[in-house]
Length: 305
Image 1 (cartoon, rainbow, N blue to C red):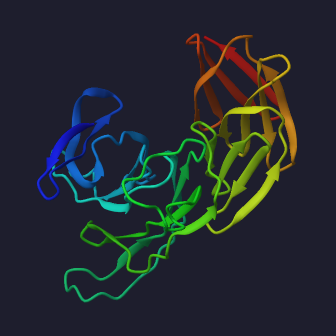
Image 2: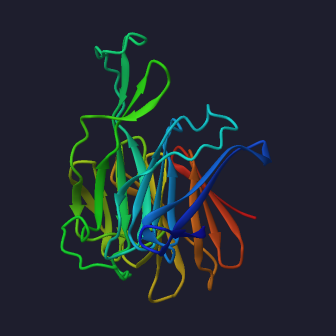
Image 3: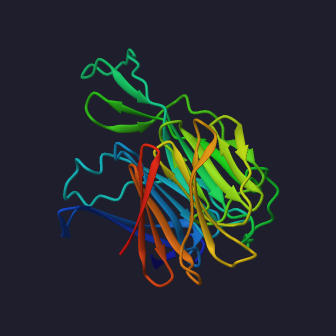
C-alpha cells in the first residue's frame, strides 16, 4: 500500500495495488490495477483480503475497520490494467478487520431484461462475512454511533448479476447488512466451512458457529485460542495450555460432535499462521517449522518439515 493525496479533503488516502498472477508464472501479472480511495486514511493498513470462488469479486479489510469491494471480470480482462471503482461497504469501525470470507449461495435465475442484445441474466447470491478483532480498538476519525460500526461479526449481501455479455454488476435485490454478534475474533481465530456455509470463530471460552442469517451452535474448548481452521467438515483448534504453556491441537468432528484428534506441538513453539488446502491444514510455527495435518477417515497424521 502506498499513499496518495486526496485533492478533495487535502488528506492522504489509502492507495492499493492488486496484481493477479498465474500460479505457474509468478513473474508476469495477467492483470494489475491500483487506485487511491478517499475516506480511508493512509494510516489504514490492509489486514484482510479475499477473492470470491468465481473470481468476480475481491474484498479488502483495513486496520481502521474499513471494508471495500471490487466487482469485475478480473480473470478475463487479461492485461487491461483498468482499475475498477470499488464499493465502500464500511468507512471505519471501532476495531480492525481480522478476517473476511465469501459465502456462495448461488442459484440460477432467468430474468427478462430490456437489453435487445441479451435474453437472460445469471444472478449469483453471495454474502460476505466480516470479522473484527474487538479486543484491539482502532481510532475512528469521527464519533461512532451506528450499530454497524460497533458489531463484531456481520454479513453483507454482495450478490451480483453476470449479464449475457459477461459484465458483472451489483444485484438490485441486495439485503441490508446483518449484525450476527457484537463480539468478534482475533486474527487466525476464525475460519469458513465451505461444506456447511458457516463461519466458525474461536474465543477463550469455546468455538462458535454462524450462518449468514443467525448464530449457530457452540462447543467448549479450554485454553487461550491461538488459531482455528476448517479441514473439510472438521475444525482444527490450536490453544495454549496455561498449565504446561504448550500449544494443544485438537480436531473437532462437526457432524458427529466429538474430538477426533488431540496432540501438542513442541514446547516454546507459537503458531504464526494457519491455512488449509481441502483436507489438509498447515501450521507455521515461530521457529519456521511447517506442520501439516492430514485427515484420513478416522486417523490423523502429523508431518514436520
